[in-house]
Length: 112
Image (tube, rainbow, N blue to C red; front, side, top):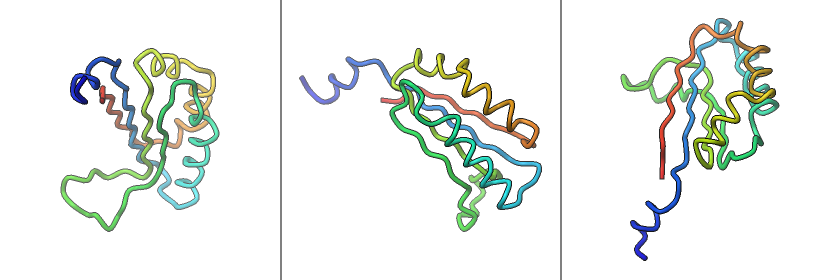
């Protein structure tokens, strides 16, 4: 079996990327959201990769959007993503932090 055909025989992962712009753009507010992301969003069943960070302000290119915190999660498959979306910990993260968000942009994609 070739690598290419092996890649297409398994269910694709689902990548979930969220970009947060905060009302309070201070370092303390950014660090709070990052801390809560680790507390509530990491280590869900089916997560194969998790990272959260900040926009690299030295890369001031026109293609980079204006955001404060980025969340990147890769799920084993679509069902794992769907279970995460309705999980108590995810809902608690939203409830605890949504008032601090000026804007969120979410991108989901299937990846191999």
